Length: 324
Image 1 (cartoon, rainbow, N blue to C red):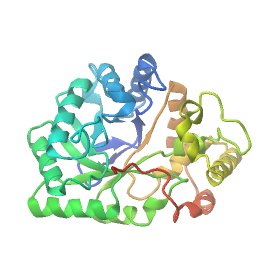
Image 2 (cartoon, one colour):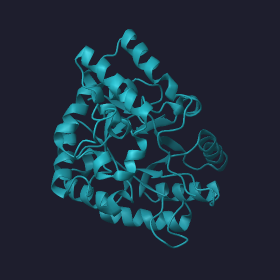
Image 3 (cartoon, one colour):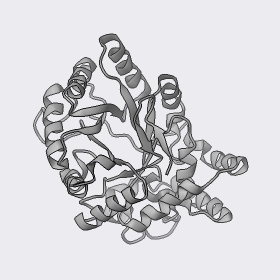
């Protein structure tokens, strides 16, 4: 396993990280714990979760899995999306973030998180309030680094400017939808992150499974797939997305790779990317994704992948999570 700095920080994270959105939902407790231990065994040190994953079950399961292993991982969680019905049960106000951090620490069975991320930009809370709150959390030792998620490039730049002006800790990373099926970050976000030393953590790196080759035009949705277990996901099965998945599968087969491993290997080579988080519902999926670490993409293959995915640069983002 290779490790990279998270942005310009001194924190090193594995090239491949573990996403845990499925834990407690599509993967039960026992399977989730097996996956976490399997990931750590293979050198994955970055584990990413959020306070809303599987209705908080993901954090609870991770807390169980990391007993005796907490020191081996860089643990990241998030807050900011909707947690309840009340007016203060969402966003990045001091009120909400302090409550959510304490709840996350309890579920994760830890005294601190290595990376605390604001899940989405909050248009109703001054950035100064959010950043001061995060700065206080770092000073208190409950958070080590801070990151953003689902921020537009201008929102990150504004936050970085405030941090510099006020002397607050700054965002070292940002999570965004990024894959062969969503290259929209390359327009503004990637140049910003390269200039400002912010590491990119792509989510949906396999476009929710579309880039694994499991979906085909005109075919039934495979049993047990994300589109089968989560009917809302079927909105992503647009013809152009499925066609891209088929093209990637064909290229991968020609070179003896799995389509998922090839897609991840391409993403790891993109500028500003620090770690790529992939989910899994069984250890076999994780093994397949680990193969991406051994793939060397030559100029010809890179050009082919760039060509078939070029229409996805100036397109609608594959996914974005925002507060209304």
